[in-house]
Amino acid sequence: QAPAVPVPQAPAAGAWVATPQELAGYQAIFQGIVDEGYADVAKVKDLMDQSQLPPSELSAIYQLADQDSDGLLSESEFLASMALIARRRQGLPIPSEVPSELLEVCSISGPSPEDESNPWYPSPEELDR
Image (cartoon, rainbow, N blue to C red; front, side):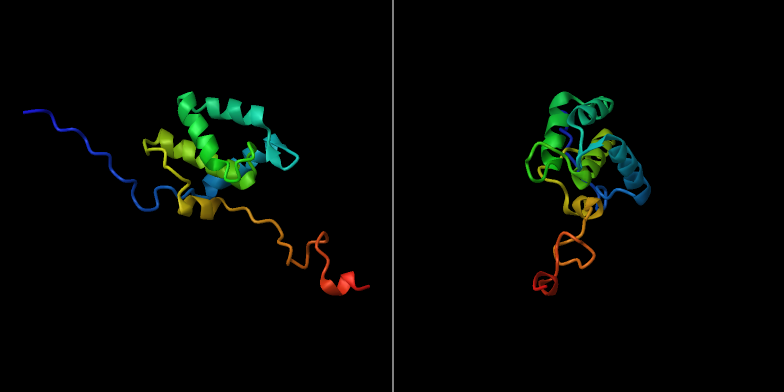
C-alpha cells in the first residue's frame, strides 16, 4: 500500500488578516524606506531577503502585492507584501491573488477627489470664483 499523499489544507478563515499591531509595525518600516510615496525598491529587496524565503517566492509575493503592476509598492501594497511574507513563513501557501480580507485591512486610503479637505480638488463653487 502506497503512503498517503498529504492533501494541502485551505487556510483557516481569517488566516490572512493582519493584526493592528502587525500593521503598525509594517507602517513604521514603510516610513523608514519611503521615497516619493513609494517604498524604495532596493530597501524592499533587502528587507524581503531577510525573511529567508526563496527568491522565487519573494518575487511572486512582490508581484502579487504590486496591485497596479507599476513595479513600485505604495504603502498599502507594502503592508500587504509584509503580511504575505509573514503568512508564508507561518506555512501558508502563496495565494494566487491577495486575499480580499488582507486587502481590506491593508487599505490605506488617502483623501479622495470628493474629500473637501483635500486642497488639490477644489469644489465646483471654488472653481467658479
